[in-house]
Image 1 (cartoon, one colour):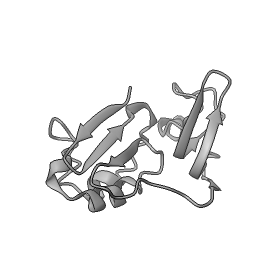
Image 2 (image 1 turned 90 degrees about the horizontal axis):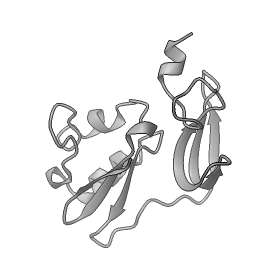
Image 3 (image 1 turned 180 degrees about the horizontal axis):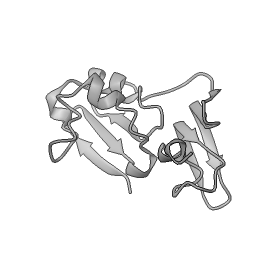
Image 4 (image 1 turned 120 degrees about the vertical axis):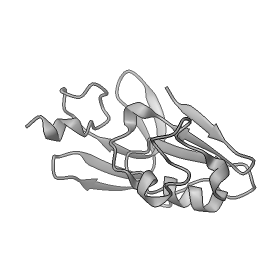
Amino acid sequence: MKKTYTSDEIEVYFEPKRCIHAAECVNGLPEVFDTEKRPWIDPEKSDAQTIAEIVERCPSGALTYHRLDGGEDETHDETTITVGEDGELYVEGNFTLNDGNQEVKLNRAVLTNSKDTDNPPFYDKSLSERK
C-alpha cells in the first residue's frame, strides 16, 4: 500500500513492499528520512529539489515523488538494466511491467524471477540472506 507524505513543494510516495533497505534515503537526507520518527518521512525538513535528488537514488523505486512547486518529476531518456550479484535486475527508466496479474508503469525497480519472494516480481533483499 503506497503511503503519501506531503509538503507545499513536493509529495513523496513510499511503497513498503518494494523497499530493499538500501538506505540511500536515510543516509542521504536523515533530517527528512528518519526511521526513528513517525511519520518517518517529513518533506517539510528540506526543499523539493534536494528531496527529489535523494528519492531518485532509491534503487527499488519504493520511493517516488511528484513536484508541487513547478519542478519536473523524474523522467528518463532511456531504460537501463543491470544484473546484480544475486541475479536480481536493477531497472532504471520508464517502463511498463506486466506480470500477468497486473500492469504497472514504473521508472525504477529491482526485479527477480524467484518464487521465494513474498512480493513477486519485486526483489526481496532477504532472499540473499536465505542462502
